[in-house]
Structure formats: C-alpha cells, structure tokens
Length: 291
Image (cartoon, rainbow, N blue to C red; front, side, top):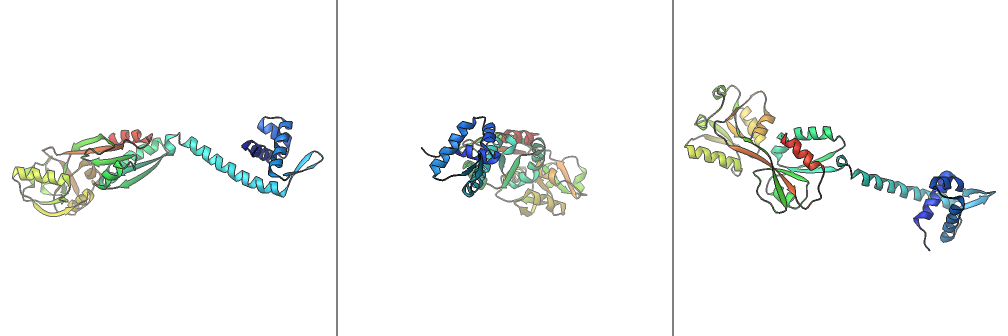
C-alpha cells in the first residue's frame, strides 16, 4: 500500500483544526476512521507525525515541515481549479486578434471599446501584420481572428464579410474642390495626388480607373500607410483617395472628406481559423465590428 491522497487530506485536516475530532467534522467522517488513516500514514512514512499526550496530538517538527509543503500543493491545486472554472467563462479568456495596421487604427478601437464594456474581464491581444505574413500566420492557426482587406481563399481559414463601403476623396481644408459635395474622377485632372504604395491592391485599382478615364494626375508622393496619406493631404501635399475607415479616424482640422461620384468598393473581411479551438468572444467581436 502506498500513500494516497486521502492520507494527505486527513493529515491536513488534523493540522488545520488541531484535533482528530475537528478533522472528522471538517471531512464529514468519524473520529475512529480518521485516527486509523492517520496511524496508517505514519506507518507508511516510518516515523511519527504527532506526539500523543493525554489524548491530544502535538505535531512534530517533521509534521510542521510536511504541512508547509502540503499547503503549497493545495494552494496550487486551488489555482488549477479556479483556472479551470475561469476557462468556462468567456470573459476570462484572452482573444488573440491579427489585423492589418490600418484596421488596428481605424476599426478595432471602437469595436473593442464596446466589447470590453460588455465583458470587462476579457483580455485582448492585437498583432498588426501585413500580407503575406498575415495570411501565413492565420493559416497556421496562430490567432483567433484576423482582419484583412480583399481577402483571398486561404487553406484552413473561413472568410466572413465584415464591411463593404466606398473609398472617399481627401482634400486639404480650404481647397477649391472642397466646395463640392462629391468629386468625379475628372476633378483630379492635373492635381497633385498622394498615392498608396505601388504594390497596394487599392492603389492598382485607383490607378486603373484614372487610366481608363484618360485622366492624368501629378503623382508626386506615395506611402504604404493610409494614415500617412491622410496626414500628407492635411499638410497640403495633394489630393488622395483612401478607405472610409481611415478617413473617418483621421478626420479633423485641415482635412476635408468628400464622397466620390464613382464607386470604388472597399471591403473588410474576417478570417477565422478552422482548426484552432473556438474562442467564445470571436462572434461577439464580429458583431461589434459590423456595428
């Protein structure tokens, strides 16, 4: 026979209450049963844990040292139990979000604000990334959710639409064209224009629209960042066409935002890994993003 958890439980109860009688009440057992369990533990250990004096138990130095170790173990077990229970509560889990930097700036903050107001104990980790890294990481099931533009099919990933809207025009405040309610492509003719980088899919679509219409712009400045585009326009370096989320996030003095007379669709998709354990807060975040 080896030492069992029951023996340690009895020992801990006797040490905690100071007597076998108290331990019996704590464990809802009988005094004779606990006395036998305690004596069996001492037999298995090969030394006495208590000195018996007139029916009372006095713990030995070995018992005190053992009790210290037992308490640390039970505290660890209590943490395990609490963690197990917490995992059953959605708000106790950490939501791992992978996102394009522009969406981390323009879309996530408002949605997360509403989500955390409903789930104040929730924890969220945001990792900004650009394709192809974003596609690779979500395909490897590293995150609970990814936010991307113009999502293409990825192995092991489900694509869900989040938003579709039209690109908008940006002008420096006070520009002559800001007096118009909406801008046509022809209004950009001959104007200095701030572009996204040449490898950006929206840059290619916008350039294609102007080429098809036979409209020439002054292409003097380009950048990978839609936020930088907004600030360059605010500084008076030209006009631009950007996504409506970044435009709204950057709105303020020095920047005029106008709709376009033509539709250049802007889409945001959520990428959901199919082989990662489901996180209960994913759907809640999707609902807030769509709001």
